[in-house]
Picture: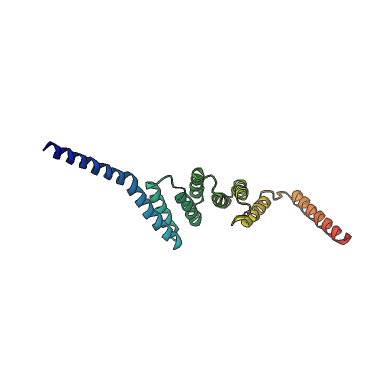
Length: 180
């Protein structure tokens, strides 16, 4: 009789341990995966707000998964929610500092908020990590465009100086070509 009670107690303890493992390990992973997949499907259908909601639900179960923050950032950008995109992108970079694409996406979000210096910095970080990456050409182009925006002449005199510098540069190029 005593042996029987000990076996039942051991089985009960094993059952409790299994339930705890499921509740604290398997269930959150399962739920996060479910919401992540729903979000990805919504994103593919251009339903960005649903994607955002589902990625956020996935984060409730697994808050330290960088891929969720990465995809959430893209959904925020597509939805035009640039403040949230920046917040999510920075969290993604905290978890995976070598994520070059996230620097590119942060550049886009900063640019959309007219935070051009921050955008340039993020595009440059992307190019440092992936100088020949998928977005290298776009990053270089955006840096050039943003630099031009940042340093636009304001007064008539500054505009005339810029025109004169441009004309001097053109004349120099023409002189070199003519000398050949």
